[in-house]
Length: 135
Image (cartoon, rainbow, N blue to C red; front, side):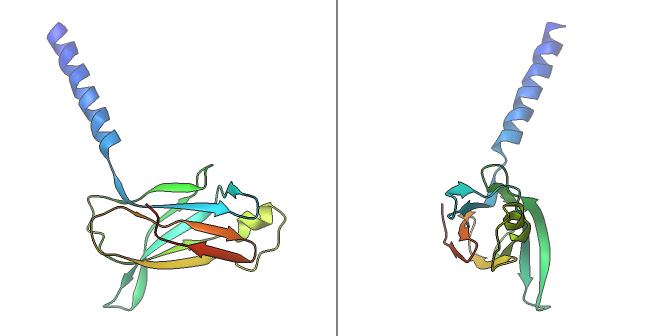
Protein backbone atom coordinates (compact mmCIF):
# COMPACT_ATOMS: atom_id res chain seq x y z
CA UNK A 1 0.00 0.00 0.00
CA UNK A 2 2.85 2.38 0.86
CA UNK A 3 4.42 1.70 -2.55
CA UNK A 4 1.18 2.62 -4.31
CA UNK A 5 0.87 5.86 -2.36
CA UNK A 6 4.53 6.72 -3.02
CA UNK A 7 4.10 5.96 -6.73
CA UNK A 8 1.00 8.16 -6.89
CA UNK A 9 2.78 11.03 -5.11
CA UNK A 10 5.76 10.71 -7.44
CA UNK A 11 3.47 10.77 -10.48
CA UNK A 12 1.63 13.86 -9.22
CA UNK A 13 4.82 15.74 -8.41
CA UNK A 14 6.25 14.96 -11.87
CA UNK A 15 3.00 16.11 -13.50
CA UNK A 16 3.07 19.36 -11.54
CA UNK A 17 6.69 19.96 -12.56
CA UNK A 18 5.75 19.41 -16.22
CA UNK A 19 2.92 21.94 -16.04
CA UNK A 20 5.18 24.50 -14.38
CA UNK A 21 7.90 23.92 -16.98
CA UNK A 22 5.62 24.83 -19.87
CA UNK A 23 7.09 27.88 -21.58
CA UNK A 24 5.77 30.38 -24.06
CA UNK A 25 7.63 32.19 -26.81
CA UNK A 26 5.71 35.48 -26.80
CA UNK A 27 4.60 37.85 -24.07
CA UNK A 28 3.38 41.44 -23.89
CA UNK A 29 2.78 44.23 -21.41
CA UNK A 30 0.84 47.49 -21.52
CA UNK A 31 1.88 50.45 -19.41
CA UNK A 32 -0.36 53.53 -19.43
CA UNK A 33 2.18 56.35 -19.18
CA UNK A 34 -0.55 58.92 -18.57
CA UNK A 35 -1.13 57.31 -15.17
CA UNK A 36 2.13 55.44 -14.64
CA UNK A 37 0.13 52.25 -14.12
CA UNK A 38 -0.36 48.99 -16.01
CA UNK A 39 -3.41 48.68 -18.27
CA UNK A 40 -5.49 45.71 -17.05
CA UNK A 41 -8.34 43.97 -18.87
CA UNK A 42 -7.31 45.05 -22.37
CA UNK A 43 -8.16 42.50 -25.08
CA UNK A 44 -5.18 41.61 -27.28
CA UNK A 45 -5.46 39.63 -30.50
CA UNK A 46 -2.50 37.74 -32.00
CA UNK A 47 -2.51 37.06 -35.73
CA UNK A 48 -0.01 35.41 -38.09
CA UNK A 49 0.64 36.57 -41.63
CA UNK A 50 -0.06 34.00 -44.34
CA UNK A 51 2.15 35.16 -47.20
CA UNK A 52 0.72 32.62 -49.65
CA UNK A 53 -2.88 33.81 -49.20
CA UNK A 54 -1.99 37.44 -48.36
CA UNK A 55 -4.15 37.23 -45.21
CA UNK A 56 -3.91 37.37 -41.42
CA UNK A 57 -4.98 34.31 -39.41
CA UNK A 58 -6.06 34.66 -35.78
CA UNK A 59 -3.75 32.59 -33.58
CA UNK A 60 -5.03 33.57 -30.12
CA UNK A 61 -6.88 36.23 -28.14
CA UNK A 62 -6.20 37.08 -24.52
CA UNK A 63 -6.86 39.82 -21.96
CA UNK A 64 -4.15 41.59 -19.97
CA UNK A 65 -4.00 40.66 -16.29
CA UNK A 66 -4.12 43.10 -13.35
CA UNK A 67 -0.47 43.97 -14.05
CA UNK A 68 -1.18 44.71 -17.72
CA UNK A 69 0.62 41.54 -18.81
CA UNK A 70 0.02 38.58 -21.07
CA UNK A 71 2.65 35.93 -20.42
CA UNK A 72 1.39 33.01 -22.46
CA UNK A 73 1.15 33.63 -26.20
CA UNK A 74 2.61 30.90 -28.45
CA UNK A 75 3.57 27.71 -26.65
CA UNK A 76 7.30 27.11 -27.07
CA UNK A 77 6.68 23.76 -28.78
CA UNK A 78 4.88 25.28 -31.77
CA UNK A 79 6.62 26.22 -35.02
CA UNK A 80 6.36 29.94 -34.48
CA UNK A 81 8.66 31.52 -37.07
CA UNK A 82 6.88 34.13 -39.16
CA UNK A 83 5.35 37.59 -39.24
CA UNK A 84 2.84 38.36 -36.50
CA UNK A 85 0.55 41.19 -35.49
CA UNK A 86 -0.60 42.07 -31.98
CA UNK A 87 -3.75 44.18 -31.92
CA UNK A 88 -4.32 45.97 -28.62
CA UNK A 89 -8.02 46.89 -28.37
CA UNK A 90 -7.64 49.95 -26.14
CA UNK A 91 -10.91 51.85 -26.81
CA UNK A 92 -12.88 50.27 -23.95
CA UNK A 93 -9.91 50.67 -21.59
CA UNK A 94 -9.91 54.44 -22.12
CA UNK A 95 -13.72 54.63 -22.03
CA UNK A 96 -13.66 52.91 -18.63
CA UNK A 97 -11.34 55.69 -17.44
CA UNK A 98 -13.66 58.32 -18.97
CA UNK A 99 -10.81 59.46 -21.18
CA UNK A 100 -11.04 60.32 -24.87
CA UNK A 101 -8.43 58.49 -26.95
CA UNK A 102 -7.21 59.04 -30.48
CA UNK A 103 -6.58 55.30 -30.95
CA UNK A 104 -9.42 52.74 -30.87
CA UNK A 105 -6.78 50.02 -31.30
CA UNK A 106 -3.02 49.72 -31.78
CA UNK A 107 -1.43 47.24 -34.18
CA UNK A 108 2.17 46.13 -33.81
CA UNK A 109 3.65 43.97 -36.57
CA UNK A 110 6.88 42.04 -35.91
CA UNK A 111 8.79 38.98 -37.08
CA UNK A 112 9.79 35.91 -35.08
CA UNK A 113 12.96 34.51 -36.65
CA UNK A 114 14.10 31.91 -34.12
CA UNK A 115 13.09 29.97 -31.00
CA UNK A 116 14.06 32.70 -28.53
CA UNK A 117 11.53 34.43 -26.28
CA UNK A 118 10.00 37.62 -27.68
CA UNK A 119 8.49 40.29 -25.43
CA UNK A 120 6.52 43.00 -27.24
CA UNK A 121 5.40 45.68 -24.77
CA UNK A 122 3.71 48.99 -25.44
CA UNK A 123 3.58 52.19 -23.49
CA UNK A 124 0.51 54.23 -24.26
CA UNK A 125 -1.37 57.39 -23.51
CA UNK A 126 -4.64 58.65 -24.99
CA UNK A 127 -2.76 60.38 -27.84
CA UNK A 128 0.39 58.35 -28.37
CA UNK A 129 2.11 55.01 -27.97
CA UNK A 130 5.51 53.40 -28.28
CA UNK A 131 6.75 49.84 -28.63
CA UNK A 132 10.04 47.99 -28.64
CA UNK A 133 11.40 44.48 -28.41
CA UNK A 134 11.79 43.81 -24.71
CA UNK A 135 13.20 40.79 -22.93
